[in-house]
Length: 400
Ligand code: FAD
Ligand code: SF4
Ligand code: SF4
Image (cartoon, rainbow, N blue to C red; front, side, top):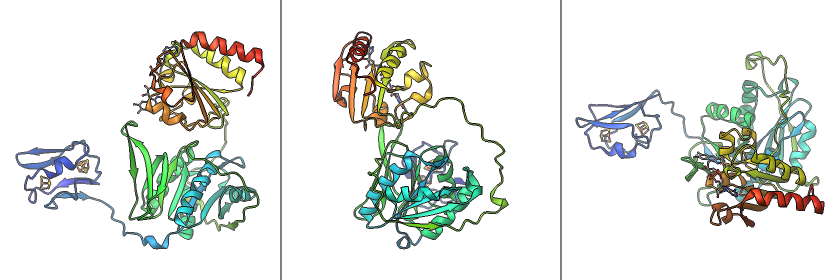
């Protein structure tokens, strides 16, 4: 697709210049010229009073008959027969959205011999579970999973579909959006229903986290979002919840399997499970050096906690990226989050604010972290942490 100005129609009014968020329109001798900063976003097309701006090669899609779509669906991600935590969290969010819309919650489950998980999905909030149980779907593969979920969506016609912003969800959801010619908002932090229009408000950080953008898909269905693990809250499991389990007729052929899995080699690296941790001890630039993390690790060991870090500690190579908490790291919601030498920037807070109890240790009494902390200790962490570790060891409070 290419955005062009039809020179014969342009009257040089300059209206389009202000409408372009990318400074991609220059006025040259009274004529609008689109430069190479253009992202083809289309924002300049409508404001032009002369209809002089066109988008060559744009695929127009007929507006969907929105009224025929009902229900809030969740792509139920599982690995090795275990539901991922983001799936149950999304079911919690889907239940709230469905109750605002007066509709049902669907779950789309894929895999081989996974039918047993369907009742867990019901217990966590699904009213209907569509199960694609088929040996060839045992491991995630982009093309066959896309084909089957598109078939499921076309059959069940949900108005909303939610995916975890995991490696799988981030790969699958854009493909589905493209096939269905609908919108997709990535990494949402808040999902609500507009009372008036019943559209889904999808809120996510934009421009480096400096603004929160609320995005809608008013003319197409389904409305689709990805949400990072840890953002939404699951509902308590209720094994007595009634629900319908539907065997979905999977229609895949060799053409849908352009790639073949020959072998799965699991990474030996012990991953950090920050998302499920009950206690996290996190270190920031205030640690002063990589050595500082020894104190953090010691406190974490006493408490039976995981270790987290702010972005500068990752960038300085004091700790690996999978420990990073924040907007571009992980979102966590432990029972206890201890922030040591972390200033509390908006990007860091975006990843840890849902924590139940926040303790901050910082030598600056006006550090922003204290605005979200339940308990604050003002002082040098190199003096405070050894005291804390000693005290915990003496009192035997390890593994709270
Ligand atoms: P600083 O802001 O430098 O704070 C260090 C703190 O330690 C200070 O408050 C200081 O008073 C205190 N201190 C110093 N010495 C001691 C001592 N001896 N004892 C006690 N306290 C001490 N950041 C993240 O963390 N996660 C993200 O995911 C993330 N994503 C980002 C995405 C974007 C697009 C951008 C632009 C930025 C992002 N950042 C992220 C960076 C963020 O803006 C901050 O720069 C970062 O969080 C600051 O890290 P910090 O608190 O460790 O360091
Ligand atoms: Fe030309 Fe239209 Fe831009 Fe006005 S808004 S300068 S007519 S392209
Ligand atoms: Fe600017 Fe978007 Fe128009 Fe390109 S399509 S000139 S980026 S407003």
